[in-house]
Length: 404
Image (cartoon, rainbow, N blue to C red; front, side, top):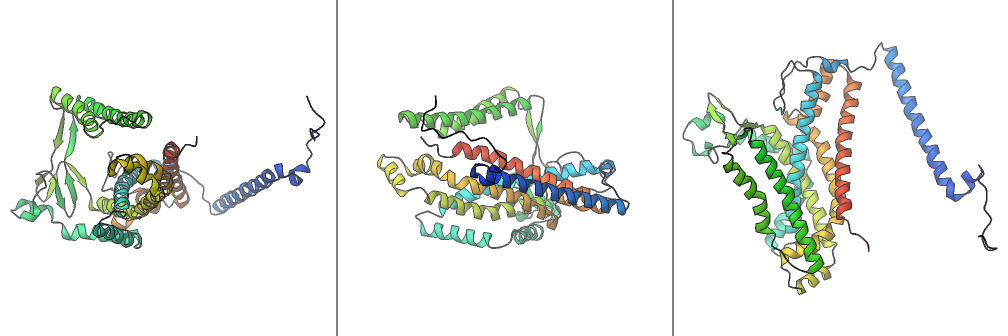
């Protein structure tokens, strides 16, 4: 029921698209969208016309042709007779491998350095400051080349492990650091070995759920459950007991020296390790500053209040400071992960065959299909970046502060 004070209901008119502030922003956004679509349509039509004039057309048939080149680091079966498509997949997997390893390592280094930058120990605090300033102010390409040069120039040749040189002995009798890379044992799974792996992955999930339950119980009731040894027991005991019950179904293929090189195991090329550690150490310096800023954004009164309740410094950091600091740390952390993925394209400088080296390098030069390969490169990197952003945004929404 209307009253005399209700304003009259005004019918919609086209002039309101410009005169009414409720609709004006949508009008300008729609016009801008039409202009962008028109620009892309004109660029596409211009590209097609130029290709027709040159007697060319966009085709991806070349992906089925034999690649004709070898790749030094592969995660799946590949030969020089494999197709360009398979070579691109190998390059994509190599890109994902070094990106994931660098993201994990950079996070560990960055969080550790960020916390130590606020240490009460003067020497530790200054050492972390030197690390941050030294690594983030030097281009990552230089660090890649430095680490790669050190590995190839300082590490001994595989043939040195044949003699009695103490500097060329295998670590734990199964890991060899050489100028051709690092040779590590390769896990060999029998049929029952996958069951042990599945139980271990389930134990990881169970450990995470237990720690969440312990934290929720602490927040709700104030009851403190131990988290250290129970987490370790949940992670190790089920898989370890099953491993021995099933008769040790997981073995190790230890690298052995035969001739002038090692055989067996897994060979982590020096180019992979150089790219991995350079990206991790370089990006870790930036993450350290984000961690430091996030911790300092939490009021000092929070720390003092937690200490007055009798909490130890480690628990104050884990239960009070870090949960609040994550709202500052996580958003720029997403950008650092994206930068790691894109900076991995510098792998060609040390001969690591990633996506840019395979699809955007040799395949492009052999086929001459520059437009097709560049479009595929853009699509692959865009898909990887959007996936990282989506996953990290889900985590960001989970850890952000909830208003009452």
